[in-house]
Length: 370
Ligand SMILES: Nc1ncnc2c1ncn2[C@@H]1O[C@H](COP(=O)(O)OP(=O)(O)OP(=O)(O)O)[C@@H](O)[C@H]1O
Ligand SMILES: [Mg+2]
Picture 1: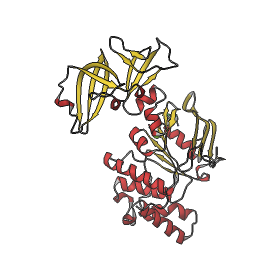
Picture 2: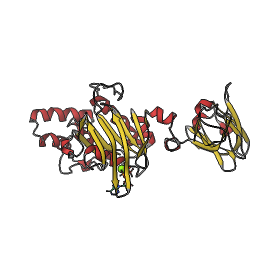
Picture 3: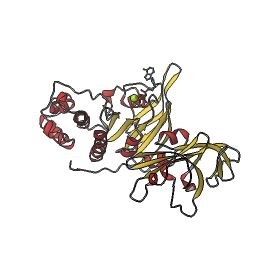
Picture 4: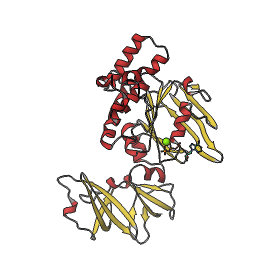
């Protein structure tokens, strides 16, 4: 795949042009139940934006409202600054790739990809040119004459993508497009999809419930829960600085240790006091959760300034490149610690389990959540 142009996505604040997609106080209710509740979002032109959250949190409903397949109960949808609320899907400059791909089985790959342009009455020479370029970009040129049912899942996925991109929509909506693929193909398609998106410079709104996928692919992520956006930011923002308990636990594994904040420590009942640094804004005696990522905890080679504590090693879980250690701090309170298995660190050779071990962390790496 040869990159043609590379578009650096802007952010809503540094861009003079209107947001590619703006959701303005948008809600969708079914009776008393809110599938989507008062969401505000600005998605910049050229941005790879993901809606991430557990099943039923309102991702598809949000996407359908952007595409015009579902009418909001409240609020408005703007595309490129134009209010499109109430317009049908074919009057919006967006295309959607559904999870099922919905390819035409009796048509060849080329005819599938040409379909939209033919229907719009695009001149034949232009169709040939645009379809040819798109097949090449999606690595489908060798498969141009095949029928979809003779293709693999990943190939079909690329046909669906080419068919949508060839129309040059302002915005491409993708609803879990990789969900049906096996893990290896999925990882490869993540990289390819991101590469294609950069080349064509189209705004992608990508729905997934897979945290890794959202972190790997997106410029920004909106983490959703029960119809609301809990946090919106860069992958690093939401991973390193989760705004609340939900985001901390949903974005990969995080330790959430319950305790009481007192004087720069989190005191665990029947367990150690964990130094976290002074937290202005949290008063002594507040019940809190200490959130710290397993990979931010050290088991050896401590540095000056690190906080240290001990616990009992309960379990060692070897997973190839990494090993997870489960350390009990107090009855029922387990801290998980993740170490890379390098030639230098092979803890499982040293520990059998049941012994008291020391661990350390940098106070700036932990969050104290109310
Ligand atoms: N037509 C409908 N009538 C009633 N409830 C609906 C309707 N469509 C969706 N819902 C409900 O709205 C909520 C959000 O649905 P949505 O499909 O947006 O979830 P999702 O985040 O896409 O989930 P998943 O990851 O499982 O696809 C769900 O609880 C769903 O049952
Ligand atoms: Mg869905």
